[in-house]
Image (cartoon, rainbow, N blue to C red; front, side):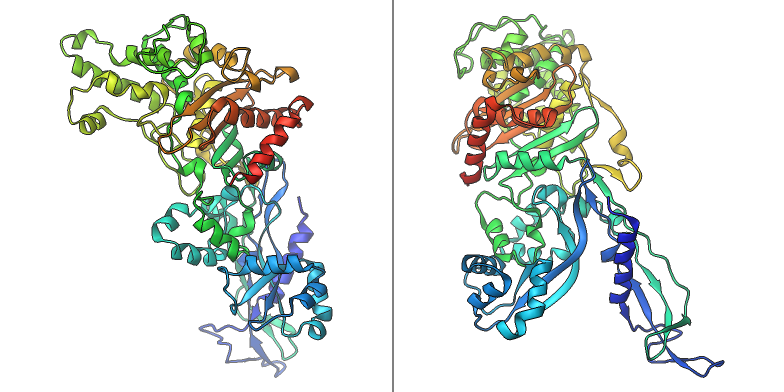
Amino acid sequence: MRTAPYRWGNMLLALLVALTACSSPDHPASAPVKDPSTGETYTPRRVVVADSLIRGRLLDRNDSVLVDTRLQYLLKLPRRALDTLALGQLLGWDSTTVRRRIQEALPYPGAYGVAVQLRLTKKEAARIRRDSSATVPQLTLTERYQRTYTTPAGAPVLGYRSTEAQPFFRQAKRTGRGRFYRLRNGGVEAYYNGLLTGHHGYLHPLVDAKGKQHGTWAKDTAFQQGQDLHLTLDAKLQAYAEKLLGNRRGYLVALDPRTGEILAYVSAPVYPAATITAPDQAGIRAELLEHENLPLLNRPAMLANPPGSVFKLVNAAVALQLGAITPGTGFRCDQSLVSCVHYHKPARSLTLGLKYSCNPYFYQVLQNVINHVPDSLVQDTVAARHHNLAQWRRYARSFGLDSVLGVDMPREAPGFLPTPAYYDKARRTRQWTYRSIYSLSIGQGEINLTGLQMANMAAIIANRGWYYPPHLVRGIGENGPLDRFTRRHHTLIDSANFEALIPGMIAVLQRGGTADASSLADVGITVAGKTGTVENDEGDDHAAFVGFAPANNPKIAVAVYLENAGFGATAAAPCAVMVMEKYLRGSIAPKRKRWEKRIQHRAKYDY
């Protein structure tokens, strides 16, 4: 962490920069003050301790600075024709770099004749000061303090300061009002803006003609330093996870189930965190806004999708709680009910049903829940189905579904779980049957979950029934997180029924399980997980996976969702387990290095 003298050095510099004449009701700047004892005349000044320099920093969970307010050097190019060869020689750039940097700064392709600014390093700025007048005349070098990102990772989490993002807002509005409001996400910079900003202060010196101070003309007001935010993110894990997803469409959310702290939060396609506010990235922003893959959409928080077979975990827990099944209940793989995508041995228990992810098995699990007729409704099967679906939804909602979890981010979608009234309206009759809603049993149909909810669902099972709300800030100044993130939430499911899910989730990554190739047994880590392949009528299926590790002492829970990537076992599970291994061990075992390289290569070019 930086020392106090460093910050006071910044403050003194701010005082010098902000020294300006200003009017006041008692001593307007145009009315000098005469000292009766000396006869000297002094001018009232107002020194503003600028809030841009007292804004708090963003640090990761290991106290590495991710965002700070620092001096930036900006080079304004002339509107007329420019000798790019001479500019490159002056800055030490080759011709390709010069063209690329200018192209990135243009608000749209071919927008020549507009003002362009390039960010420079301190060394490059020094070369401009020394040699520009003779080599490339009419260059303008300016300095200003601005939020500076020390890492390209974590863009949707870090966010941006709205006052520095005005060029982005103007660009976004030109792409269509609806898209602008859907994509806007200021991250923790916006959510905690009041705490980061602090309060600026004022000094009121009287100065002579030489600028020397002679007392004050009004009472000084003290500034309040903005508070640093200590994020839950692990910066190294975040960067690693972004390499795995890269330009693919989807998300990855990893959190510590013991605390609800988000360790990694990836919305893909990824883009550098500084892009939104950087003065020389207008061209890149235009590409991001127009791209069909919507890279600026904050997928884990705002995009709710059918979860697929990972939702079988919720259905099993609810069925166990309601007594519709027991851990030893077996069902035949009856494909006249629903297709099963792969051959497997009979699922004679819940553990085997999870291991093989047998669709007919879970069809019959939820069928037992919905078609059960309570004694009080024995004469009315329609009322029984309505009652049972409402019960199912009540227990499922206790997982934090169909509602916002309250993550510390400006926007979050609630997802959706259907109600009996929803089906009455959608089917235009109260006489609907289980056969018309069975897709709920395999996490399809009307169910929609966000990435945050998927990861939290894994954390709940890891904790055997409870969770702390997922959050991105673990410390505010010298204090802890917001109070609401320290309150434990419990589901309506008994811990014993969550415990009954664990053997099946472990079996998923053992020999014969749907994700056995992703086992970490070779490095002594037992992973509990569940794969999902989400049917998609508009293209290739989506791949999903949720899990946690170590299975009996969980320290990390992960949810991965990759759009149009195919099977969860082959696309999503490998990404999840490598993030687990990276976090728990710090490195990837040689056995998976080739696997890792192949995934990162695909993530780089699959756009």
